[in-house]
Image (tube, rainbow, N blue to C red; front, side):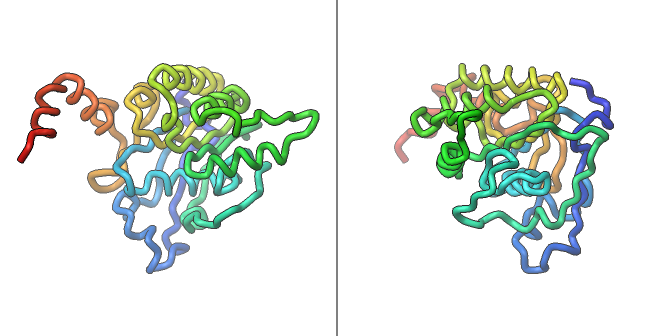
Amino acid sequence: MGMEKNNRLIRGVQLEWSKIGFSSYIREIKALQNIKRVEFPASVTFFVGENGSGKSTMLEALAVAAGFNPEGGTKNYSFSTYDSHSNLCDAIRLLRGYRREECGYFLRAESFYNVATAEERYADLEHPSKRLHEKSHGESVLAIAQEYLRSNGLYFLDEPEAALSPQRQLTLLLEIYTCAKAGAQFFIVTHSPILLGMPDAVIYNFDDGPLHACSYEETESYRVTKMFLDNREQILGRLLSEP
């Protein structure tokens, strides 16, 4: 995917803790405590960890700092239905590469309905609506991928696998890999052992102390899935047995 550091749209990020209030919950995120800088050397960066570990908060802050609407969409989306994003975006400084993105998208499942509504409102004759409300969630995610994923684009995806079948996850993996190889950059929060298997990606783990890189085989998504598939009957026998 072209691992040269200077070829990244975003090479890394610096955290300026002086801009975060002492009572802010951001200071309680264990993965970020004492972290001052994070490098992004790959075209695809995954954030993994348990629910509430801070990975989506980090993704959101990166997207907002890069100029995207907190609720999602392209940079042209400026609507707001509920202002709930954290102040972490005010405390991070993006370390840009020499290139600038030509397009991009911020996909987040929790506000997707609002984004689909805005997409219809912003449509015109030159940019007809994809009528996302008329599609299933999974179909809408793939429609967005086919419409917006381009080379030299910057993308932030929060659990894009949520409504996708395993086969569709493979389709999305191919879309992401192809665009990343052509110069796009992705930041992805996911629990999918399929997406996490993407070659040449960097995986940052928000569990077990400070933020750190880990291998595919070290992720909980891989370990739990493999353990279940290899020992399904024994695990279900113990899990479902009457006390």
